[in-house]
Image 1 (cartoon, rainbow, N blue to C red):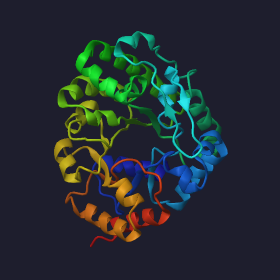
Image 2 (tube, rainbow, N blue to C red):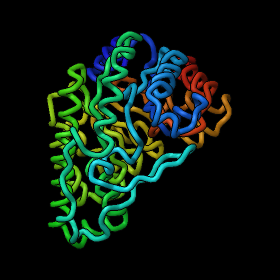
Image 3 (cartoon, rainbow, N blue to C red):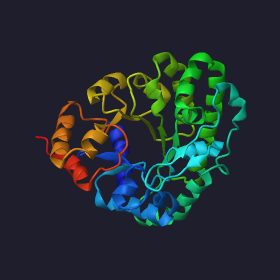
Length: 344
């Protein structure tokens, strides 16, 4: 992120109102390659093209906070690859990681990875090491350590339906799996911080938290996420869950979260009431149906409606309810920005 954007983010988290309405988007491989005009496979395999795509976005939208900024990732294959999952690649689509076990009773077959040596993780770090001089020369810093959340990783290693069933039928082995994943995740975040001391934020993405009930959230999600967000003393603890978010939102403060990206299906006021006044919210225009599929005129009008939907504008970053989806045009992003700044 730009130093100025990072400083503005901290001000927003502290409850300050900025002179200009802050706009932010989570961007990564679902959107960047297609928007930049390259294949998904080229985006992953070429440091040069990866760097060009990220710089293209930053220069096209200089007033937008792109988060986490220069995200070195291989989509959902990132963490499962470290556990040994087989990865399936596509030229124009996201890769896919196959499951490692088909029953929670096989949890002892899963070995806790070493983030310095296992899977794609060394390549993620090396890409950033190689590109860091150019990133800094362009005026940006690496500010976030990033990982998928423990329930998300578990669902890839076991399968989503199988993991949901395991929480109900075999809680002991489920906790054993989540314990392994949590220890790994903490070491992975610490390794990122060790390699890049400029990091002062943690971003955890876990949509599976949005599919569980309150008992499961309090037993299988919140305690592990709290430990992960305590990996190091970060100024920004950023949690992304753009699935159903009403169950997890009351646990945000307990987990140490101070920035939350949630589903567009929940209004800003609804999440504010559940999260409390001190959690900064990132959202919540529909990403696919409006920002990607809507006309520029629709994006503009719906953005104005979103802005007017909540009276207290403190602790808000204006965005979509999730990450930037495929197919979002430059014109629609420009109209989103205009919609947040022409609301009177």
